Structure formats: structure tokens, C-alpha cells
Image 1 (cartoon, protein in one colour):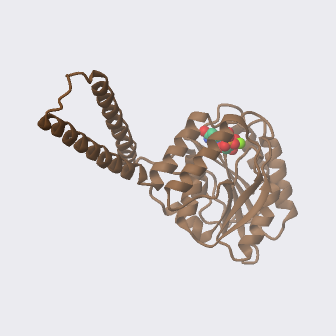
Image 2 (cartoon, rainbow, N blue to C red):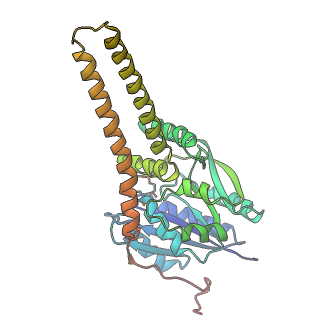
Image 3 (spheres, protein in one colour):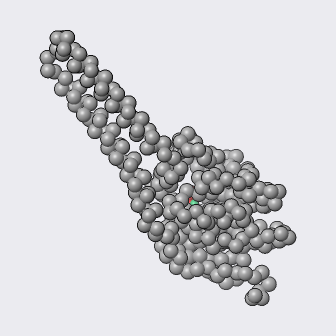
Length: 322
Ligand code: UDP
Ligand code: MG
């Protein structure tokens, strides 16, 4: 493994403002670290701006870069899967956001850790630049996720990291549609090493993932890595059934002994009926979350559709074809 092929996989959605800087910084990284054969796979996730044109122009100039164009916007997780599939023959892949919140300058340290024997390297944030609602949401999600699943993800990690050959092959062979990358990375196991870094502000442009999408990924993470919501329902059902049974005995006993109260209790009844109705609806909702996901999985529709497959290069940068 004298000069391993390391591919940087980056989903791109409406990032025309950051692309020039991204490309420049990746190029600097590639040129400055001749120990690896570098590649970059930029996956266009149905951008509506000039992103594709910018990438295409660069790809024509620098054969280390490659464009995979999806047929529409499939979302970050799907775009990432498309990129990982495209990079399947690499010795290692780096998964990274396009907006430079994940600084490419950390990559050599990850490659170093991988060469030192790690199969999976996670970039761990020393600091985080998000604030406000997103911040609160991220924190709450990590706390809940850590409690609910057997595969807790380190709270300060995101997508940024490295997968070695085996880990990549394993990830690519996972059959599921609802993908939550950090959770799956924790699930596949392997020797994992951490590299710490400072999370940056977005280099330019606006966050492209809507809050709604993030909530959906959070739910995907929870429901695909935990059966606890289902079990909680069972426990709630058992508890409420017991409480109901005890109440029945209590009221029946009072009637038998003769301390019957007048038929008031309208408030109590309304409370009980509404409470039970609520619990049942929540139960149906939770079942629905699982059922919907089961439905999506059995349809076996692909995670993404590629409009323009990237050229796979089984050759080096010298320009000679194999
Ligand atoms: N992204 C994508 N598809 C989308 C939304 C975002 O491929 O539908 C990409 C985006 O271009 C960026 C990465 O996913 O490279 C992270 O997006 P963003 O910075 O908006 O998310 P955040 O930093 O808030 O998690
Ligand atoms: Mg971002």
C-alpha cells in the first residue's frame, strides 16, 4: 500500500458559493500530501443553482475530481450513499460536507490514524459553531439517542470521518433505505479512532438542510436503531391496564360495602377517556413510524437515482488510459 487511493466524498446541494473555495482547498490538500493517490467525488444532489456547471468545469480540468449527478434532490444521506458507492474501489474514503464546516486540513491526521491501524476514523469537534434551535435540537437528539440505543454515537461527531476499505465495503453492502450515517458507522464496528478538530462556520451560503429534514433524520436514527419506543408502549399498556383493574376493584368494593357515592364523576370520566384516547393515538403513531419504514424497505426502491454517472478512473493522473 505505497500510495493508497483516498477518495473524498462530498454531497453538494446548491453550494455554488462555496465550491470554488472547496475545490481550492482540496487541491491544496492533494498537492501537499503526495503520499496518497487522491480522488474527490462530488455528488450533486439535484442542485438548482450553478453547482453542476462549476463542478463540471473543474472536472474537465483536473482528473482527480469526479462528478456524480443525481436525478433530483434526494437528501444528504442518500447523496452520501451515492458517493460511497461510486468510491467503492478506494482504499479509504473521507466523508465530508461541502460547506467547509469540516475543514479539509484535518484529513491528513485522519489518514495518519488509518495508516496506524484504525479502520474507521471519526472527526470529533472540540467546539461547535451552531447555535439557537439547531444547537438545542442536536444536543437533545444526542442525549436521547444515547439513552435509547445500544450503539450510541459520540455526541460531538457528525459525518466527517474516514472509512477504510473493509468498513466502506460493509457500509456499501447495507441493504436499508432509511440511512443515518453516524448511527450506521457506530453499528458496523471495526477499530475506531478519533481525531479532534474545530468546527468552522459555513464558508459561504446558507445551511441547505431544512430543520424538517434534520428532524426526519433524527427520527430515522431513533426508530432504526431502537425498539424502545415499542417496548415503552407495551409497558405503558401494562401499567394502565393494572391501574384500570385496581380502580375497578376499588369502586366495586365500595358499592358492595354500601358506601356508594352519587353518580357524579363526569370530570373523572372525561379525564380518563381523553387520557386513554391520547395514549392509544400515540401508540398508533409509534406503530405507524415503524410500519412506514417497513413499507419503504419492502418496496426496495433505490435510495437515489443517478442521472450522470461519474467516470470511474482506473488510471492515475498522468493522463494515459489503461
Ligand atoms: N446537502 C445535500 N442535500 C440536501 C441538503 C444538503 O447534499 O438536500 C449537503 C450540503 O450541500 C452540504 C451538506 O449536505 O454539503 C450539509 O448540509 P448543511 O450544511 O446545509 O447542513 P448542516 O451543516 O446544517 O448539517
Ligand atoms: Mg453545514
